[in-house]
Image 1 (cartoon, rainbow, N blue to C red):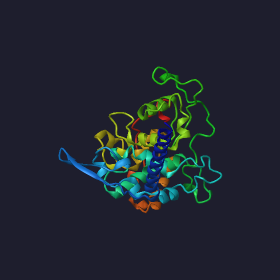
Image 2 (cartoon, rainbow, N blue to C red; image 1 turned 180 degrees about the horizontal axis):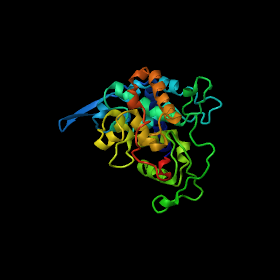
Image 3 (spheres, rainbow, N blue to C red; image 1 turned 90 degrees about the vertical axis):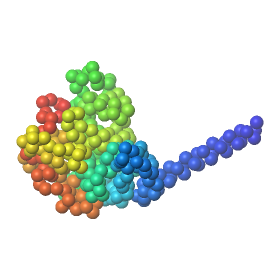
Image 4 (cartoon, one colour; image 1 turned 120 degrees about the vertical axis):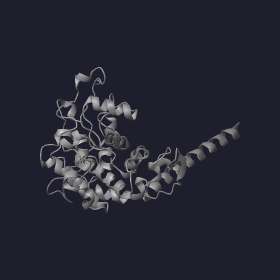
Length: 328
């Protein structure tokens, strides 16, 4: 019996060692940006589909392309968000490359950062992170390193003006006693109904525990990527769709001056809070982050698109605001 007990402990010990080694190997891939995972391929209904293991898993046409860690590595993440861990930042130690890639892995089989060739893939990552950087920045005009170097400075709203509880949704997304639905995350979530809908999609109880978003960077990135990949309404495109070229404007879209490109991503994510108001600072700030990140990633801002594609200054909102629902 003593021998069995000792062997049991040894087995347990080796099990722990194997798990630790697996984690270390995954981290080595993340740190070095070396996608050494063997690509599995097969043909389904005449189409080639692939599986690249943990980062792009599940037999997808998109997994036949490079994964994000192939072209966007730790040092690039550090360059884009170089001031996020400065002593004056408000989320020191929270955001990191590992959390971003881990969250992105869930959406790469659906095309996030894996649509098109390498140029489009890099541009989409820069576009998404351009929104993230602008919405979490504490940069200002004379900030060290410039105002665009301070993305991911925040992970939550610092001085909420309200609890963001809308009783109109009390039957679908009732506010939880003591919960505060102020802005949190990489693309900040506001209001009980947005926490409820995001939580349903991610299978996490964010309605009762909105604080999870500010406690877990992977979850915060996951929520933001879900928002990027998901249409506000079934009849509309997602930010991903309008950026990578999956969306073809209707005649009504053309009349509303909505066209594919980065500008339309702002329209979908922020509506008339940012778009259709001319050349306002809040819109230009988001564009500037996108262009800055393109430069840092070695793509170059000249690949950002024409002024009409970049801007939403003249675009009519996909979903005009009539209430607090515009505040997402």
